[in-house]
Image (cartoon, rainbow, N blue to C red; front, side, top):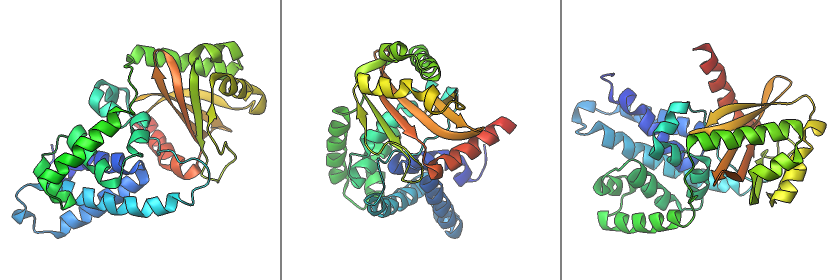
Length: 291
């Protein structure tokens, strides 16, 4: 382990920022700003480096949230979190895997900035209330009230059925095979009746502008995949702590597909093809191949 507190806590800082922002690129910017501030301070005077850096990253993320909120008002089509490449061992940490899952990030998007910060810090990383209060410049009592509201809000919206890793992988493989071969019945078998397909192209590439709801509509649309894009290939990967899919076109990453699975069936399909959101993912994939 490094003697540098920033290096020691970097993964924590990135994860806090990512869960607050839903963007790996923005999270990296926030972590970089945190490092600059850490490097500029008299570190000998900092009693608790971890708390100090968590406070900085939280405040920076809150500032960034206000900026991106205005930016998203002009976003073309549906907005989805930026997919994050993870390794299979992340899934073994159940709490971490759930906290970075696309399903949880979508729930966190429905919280206000302060509620989101409190939920991430308290429920995911067990940061003491007084430290959260310091980061948010609120009283511990106010933070406890915010935490209570956030927990209730998230509990009412998070996926309720736990699925084993084996069930997840099996459902993802059935889905991949059905799309690749245009198997309509296979799609009906793996999709939940109320499945919703959401796509994010950011207005930069052709994609669905609105969610598609219901197994019949989603299955019929996806069954045409081999005909519409005959040269595309679908492969497996791990995104946000869960099995996922990648669609390659002309040898390049074209779309990252995250899935929510309940009771062995797919309830949500999140397809990201916005090039800006795939850039960092593509770089991470290249780096992982060279290791």
